[in-house]
Image (cartoon, rainbow, N blue to C red):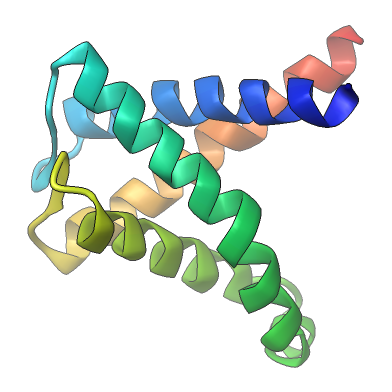
Length: 119
C-alpha cells in the first residue's frame, strides 16, 4: 500500500511542479485546463516511474563518474520525452528545458524532503 501512496504523492508533486514551470518559465507552455494538466502530470509520473529507472541503471557509470550531476541530464531527457509524448506540454527553447528541469527537480526535492520530515 505504501507504493500506491508514493505514486499518488509523486503525481501531485509533479502536478505542482509542472504548474509552476508553466507559470514562471518563458518558453515552457502547459495548458491550464485542469484535465489536460492532470493528464500531463500522470504522463510525467509514468515516465519517471517506468522509464527513468531503466535509463538511470544503463547510465549509472556516467552518473557515478560525474558525482551524480548527470542525473540532471537524465531529468532533462525525461522532461523532453514528456514534451514529445504530450500535446499539453510545449517546451520551445533549450533554455526553457534547462530551467524547467531545474525548477521541477527543486520542487520535487523540496516536497519529497518535507513529506519525509513530516512522517
